[in-house]
Length: 298
Ligand code: UTP
Image 1 (cartoon, rainbow, N blue to C red):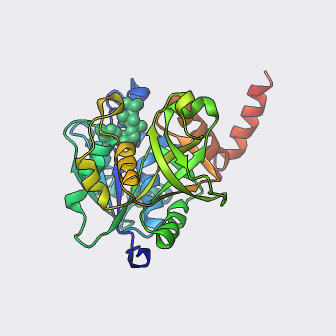
Image 2 (cartoon, rainbow, N blue to C red):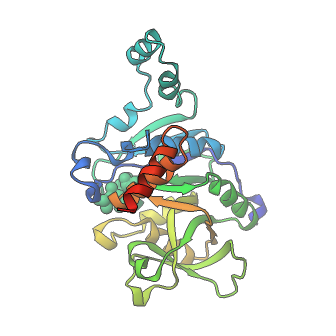
Image 3 (cartoon, protein in one colour):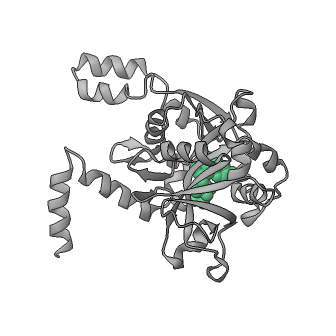
């Protein structure tokens, strides 16, 4: 049956309507998706990743107070004219980097009722024949790019839905959605999932394979979401909808990411991401490295 599964990725849903409470006070006025990693906001990094995975458009779930996110993708003719007049070619190229990259549409989530609720809002924005879609969380940096391409291959092979996982230290499992892995999963990279639990207590965690912010979902998830009651934190959790689908026989696999992963949603993870990316940066890398060595030696 899975050979019939359409494997074309057209839409990437980007939930960006959360309150960002772990990043207050900055997020009182600045959406966390606009905080720069070196000089580029998380939302632009996601647009690049989605375009590279072959998607045609981003469906960004936004909140009424987070209008700046969509503004980031709009042309600012005045700024461009000024940069041009001043001969600032490099900056002009940066400002224009999102032009023609990918189509961007906004879907408003009036209230932050949870990640599952946010994803559910995308249903009416998919074409009728889109059998799957991706979700990419802009506060999760999964490097190098390319995990979604592997996830698409896995859906081609097994059908159903495919998620990205990383192995986390045991003491961290209660921060994540955690996978219950099939016992016969001996492929180190692709594993069948028997179940999924949102933020379990350490003693209840079925493994230390944790969900990262990359999902390739069959559109059946929308129907499962309509039957998903508020869970942890009173929010509608995507984890609970996926668990429901698994319990009804929907195939779910994980691709275990072997590269880097940074959580941009809290200051600690965000600072690491900035340092990591800056160390690779042509302009800032060398002097940052020298300064860090000196600073750590103090
Ligand atoms: P998080 O839980 O990481 O984001 O949700 P948050 O709620 O903004 O952060 P804290 O916990 O208050 O610090 C994961 C992703 O889902 C989006 C968030 O914007 C983030 O990208 N989200 C979450 C929504 O779009 N809507 C929601 O109702 C909840």
